[in-house]
Image (cartoon, rainbow, N blue to C red; front, side):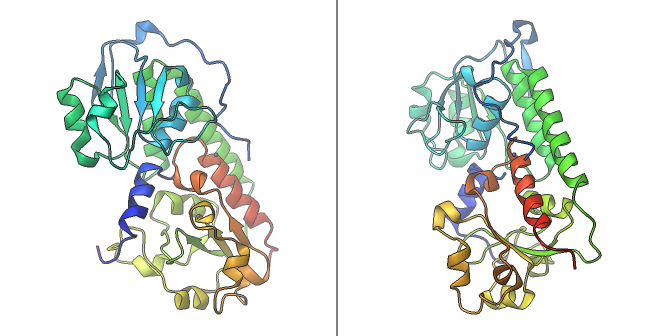
Length: 310
């Protein structure tokens, strides 16, 4: 790869992911059907559990969101220090960035959910006879649906996981179907950080924008794919592309806003800035690939609908 986002940004993308209105599909606090003991032993994603897990440790914010969305929240006894949704999750000082096998084992888990195998933590925990389910950052919506299904199987909530998948699919389909067709597609710039790292339409995030009919100005910067879908643009190239919409996924981490964008040299006259189409996204929703992906698609659709047809 030629250019990559900084290591910390890559880690954040992998661990929080990506990566929903139709209202949020994650209904925290809603009563969940009891997990069925008859569903065990259960196998999914290379993991076999002899019985329903009751002490789940999640080291990925997306995994945490999924577990609570499918009704397995009561089985989660600890989550990593970055998991913050839904409200009231059992946050701990465990780290998904630098996982420590001894600290995790001290929680007596019967299932650990991770998104990246940092420090070969899976092997370390396996040696301690602790089952580990790995859910990499989704590259497609089908990947997200597969992980939802796997976690439903492993936690004894297969039916509720299936319902969640259907809700996400239907929510996205309804939103996309309602977007008015345009003679000329709108263009957009998606900002990961202040150094102009972005995403192409070949990434999970980019595919959502493509579904809504938007053209990504970052695609030419990674035409050969050597940046892995995360090219670093230049301020000059962004100004030259003059996108119709700008989406900021660095509002919480880096305090970026329509005002800070307007203050950048040469940016005040960009179509998106001039016409008020700079969209401040919630960093968490924009970087995770759980059920709240519907919320992200809703934000994209809302922004598109505010741009007058030419």
